[in-house]
Image (tube, rainbow, N blue to C red; front, side, top):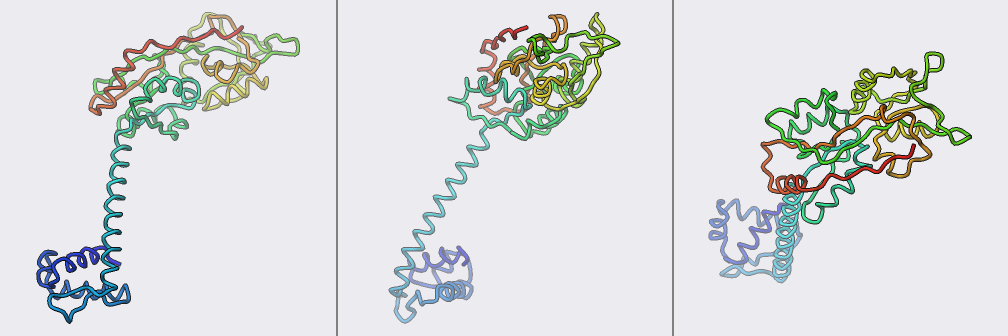
Length: 311
């Protein structure tokens, strides 16, 4: 059934005249009459008594008029609700962040703003590679990117141009960790040796943490002796491998503290630790009032502190 026929029928029921109803509907009288007849054929009963002057509704027509008005009212209300929902979705701030920050930082941090700012996390972003975050912000696919920052992360440089803004909202530390042996001692200790290189659980080169660790190991005075036995794209997977005793690796300290350290201990002294920033990026061209509100709130927040992981 064409919903336009319902409107035609209501106009005819009000005017009781085919010509006037057709004029109101901005169609010719033959076209209008044909649409009313198609409506009656669809319903299967006569709705209009054409033998009276002015026209009148049949008993079935009166019943159908009430139903038509109810259907139209329901449709209007549903349409308004859909538009309200779409407007509410459009006003949500779209966050993108990686899996590690989602698990170890995002929920607690964003809880500070959830009472007055509507936020939506793109869960697909938790599996993106590093450069995907830059592209998403550049193409307007998200409003905010929350990520690690270190001078060695080259793929973030497009976000340091004039068209973007950032603020440092917290600090993080990458810690070399290992499982313990039967005596409760570190299973592996840096730097290892040529004769006995340490099995290394690392990250693939599309991640945020790969260039950070590689840069640090190139610059550190004490040369590490590592034999890479596994690469992962997610820190949670690196953590699981290290916890099972497969090797040594670097993990964000917040991830170590989130969910418990799982028997992991430091695999080296402070010289092996690496400091990072947690940055929030936005496009300057995004003029969303919600975004500006969160941005200013974030600027006024005291960066969360880190506890010390046990050695």
